[in-house]
Image (tube, rainbow over all chains, first blue to last red; front, side, top):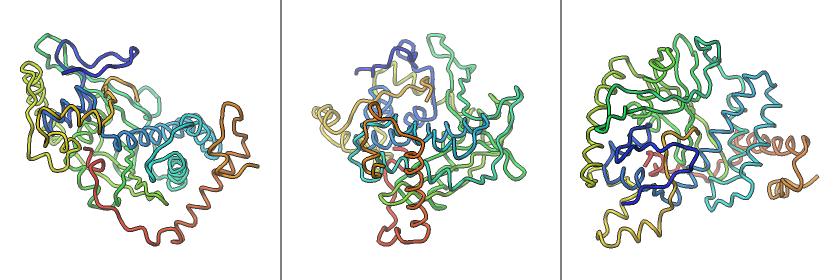
Length: 304
Length: 57
């Protein structure tokens, strides 16, 4: 097995054979299926279509964060919008997407429509104990658990914003999707690894007890972008439960790393992007990976 | 002024956008949104079933 290469400026999330820095994405792969974790995290394979979705989501996310930053700095909404559109166009120049929905024009459309949709947003940004607004909060949280080589484990992530809404405080997160954004879409987040981690991080790292996460979902279609806002809640007991189960999963990862064996978990195969690879004879899987996937390493330590 | 298609295909190193051109792009997208909200653009676009990426896979 070859570990995916990483740019020099970002430290590796691995020490020896052990992954010590974990974010919600890599932990989710591990929990889903060891083989999926091997392909996605250790080897960095992405389905070509997923690579387009990731790029679209990255620019969408970054643009709206930039907008938040301009607003916090006192810029007018119209000027902030203009600057965000300019930056997004410059950063995506030359991007030739073969996806009819997730492409450069629809990215710009989605940014402008989102800002107009939530122009009079009732969410109020929290001011942290240090006096700074709670926007763009990257976190690295050291755990008391250590890898067998003595390296402490770390949880990482990035919160868009912490806000006050009604009589509660919440983390916010933005999602893009190709499907309809209704109650069925939001239900999945009630048992979502990322939302549990974000709730815990707001409580522990930023000393801001939150009730859960407010999700702004954008359905990216060929001719329109539709928005919906949903919520997912976590009680302190639920967050503690999530954290207390973490060592079990880290031990699992240690075992896989030490044996070099990443078994398939068949019940998770139906909706998995690697189904078309795992279903082939082991002797030809590498060829299928190389033809249908691209290598885009994932690093939980990379600031996005 | 260039058309919207020309603005999107422009080489931005050779010719950066002016403020008016960016406002033109924003205005164009807002007009499309107004059309969408009024229902003109939604006809014939059925809801899509869940995909793998929607499930984070």
